[in-house]
Amino acid sequence: EPPGGRSASAAAVERGTSRVMAEHAAADGQAGAGAAEDDLDDVEIAESPRLAQVFPVVPPLHNRRAGLQHARHPEKLFRKMVEDEAAEDEWHFRRDRALAALARMQHMVSGYRARAEAAERDFEKAEALAADRAVDIRYAVANRERRCENNMEEYKARHREAEVRLGEVQADCDRRLR
View 1 (cartoon, one colour):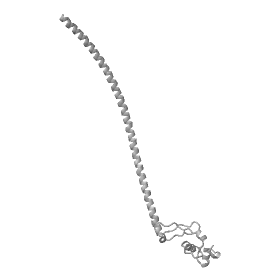
View 2 (cartoon, helix red, strand yellow; view 1 turned 90 degrees about the horizontal axis):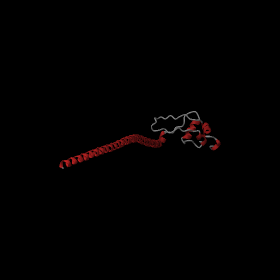
View 3 (tube, one colour; view 1 turned 120 degrees about the vertical axis):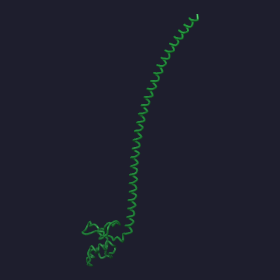
View 4 (cartoon, rainbow, N blue to C red; view 1 turned 60 degrees about the horizontal axis):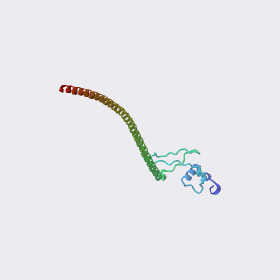
């Protein structure tokens, strides 16, 4: 309660000013000794305008009473608005850089995934080719062993035949020499 037990709005009515004007004066810090904190609770100040916002700024409607919210004059808030805009720009820049880095990493991941899948396919192809070559080598080894055995049998047969002929020739020679 202000001095004298009257609220700022009651004092304003007695002075002939409206309650809204008293609230404006209280919100701007220009109220006299008659302004009470109870009346300041009813004052709703609009969000500060942005630098990118076109002036004049029209504040939104008050939530608890008829009329507009109180607006602070931009000249009083200009330095804070510039700082807020710079902070927001910095945040947007960092967010954009983070999103760009994320997109780059996602692109790199998809590239690495494609490379890994291609390497896996190449490995599977190489593994299948190596298995085919191993089968071919085993077949070639078995074929050569078989041919060697056949050749050995043929050579042994020729050798026996040559020994038989040699024996015949020696016997024929011995007969002739006698």
